[in-house]
Length: 101
Image (cartoon, rainbow, N blue to C red; front, side, top):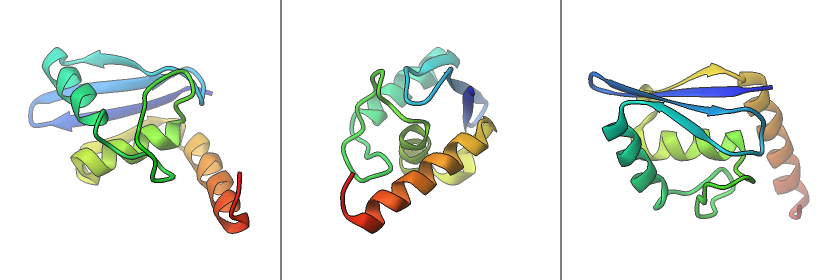
């Protein structure tokens, strides 16, 4: 299932689309905002607290987490795939509970 996450900064908007999770992230929208996003993501942390590295193993939860941490919850909106995020969050909780992956 696809995941779409919109980031809004003032009048500019960009949408991150993942056809599957884990997978690659495709960006559309404001070129200036996308450039800022990609720069700031390189210094962010994903869902499990590790350094965010966008690649074909990026999870939707990692992407959503780093966007919220870098830009604030009020600027991030999940357009599609809320159930994917919920599933990944539940899986992460189980890993944290057991103390291993």
